[in-house]
Amino acid sequence: MLPNDVKPISVDDHIIEPPDLWQTRLPERYRAAGPRVVELADGNEAWAFEDQVVQTLRGNTRTADGFDDDPLGIARFSEMRPGCYDAKARLIEMDADGIWAQVNFPDFCRFAGHRFLACDDKGLATACIMAYNDFVLDEWSATDPERLVPLGLVPLWDVEAAAAEVRRIAASGARAIAFSENPTSLGLPSVYTEHWEPLWRAVDETGVVVCLHIGSSSKLIKSSDDAPTCSVLPYVGANSMIACTDWMFSGILDRHPTIKVAFSEGGAGWVPYLLEQAEDIFHNYRVQIRGTRAPREVFAEHMYVCILRDNTALAAIDAIGEDNIMWESDYPHDSTLFPHSKEALETSMRDVPDDIARKIAETNARRVFRI
Image (cartoon, rainbow, N blue to C red; front, side):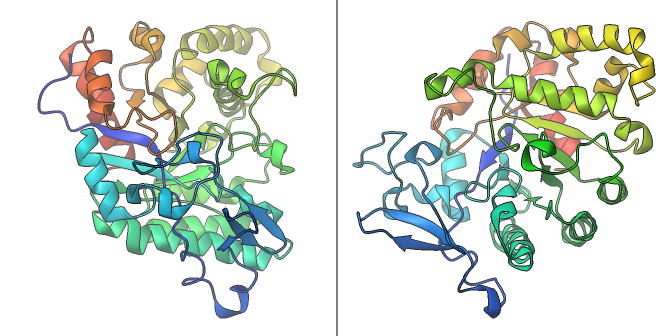
């Protein structure tokens, strides 16, 4: 069970970017085209940048008391809980939810910052990434550096600039970066190519964790356009399975043996099956695989998964590895259990040995993210 003195650490939560983030941090020449919150003719709010308009769904936020919380409705900042976008308020929410620390991904930016791939002006796009990182380092995480663990973004469209940004933000305390689970879906080179080597060298040098959040390829696998939106939820781990296989077979982790890869919001129950199959493929098709080490070894030394509620994974801890599982609360998205996250964690850990429960809830994250 979960020991009473555990301080739970969630490795997957989100920041709803505050309305003034880019308008106060972008160079003056980019502000007119940069992201800003506007009111539409129907009274709803949206983000506008260049010629694009993007609305935030209520399901990505926590709605304040007294407002409609339909997850498919449009969110307004005045109707959100301040903990969605304000660091001091987030700490209060964390205390109420029994969470000690969080690793937060962006929301409007998309989970790997790939919203800005759509910018016509890549100078603006890169400036937006740097402004977001400055906000995280200088304002959000600076509010409490131990509890709000800084995760940064990189300009995916310029690998040399991405490597430089890793070094810049790591020098200021960033512990992790977000990267796409499948960059080819974004029109970028795959992880099997040499294209990303400058980035991996920077990651290797600085020790930041590479976080692959589901949906960071801009899509979730879906059977058909007319399948209900919720139909993707039982198998969101499929995206993580694909990404995990690519990283095991690509040889990146042979060339860069200190890199750690975290799969965010994909669950963990799929891991035993994937490792069993990958081992078989590795030994039977080695001529096709660039990696030189067996998948179980690569996973054990370099890879980490996280659970929200995943009894299948907890029944297979021996197959996954007690040192390779972490926990998430996913605040403020609609899958979060706020304000009952710690209660749900305690329920999940009821039959887990105390020392392993402590690892999953806290100490694995402390070690991986250097908290």
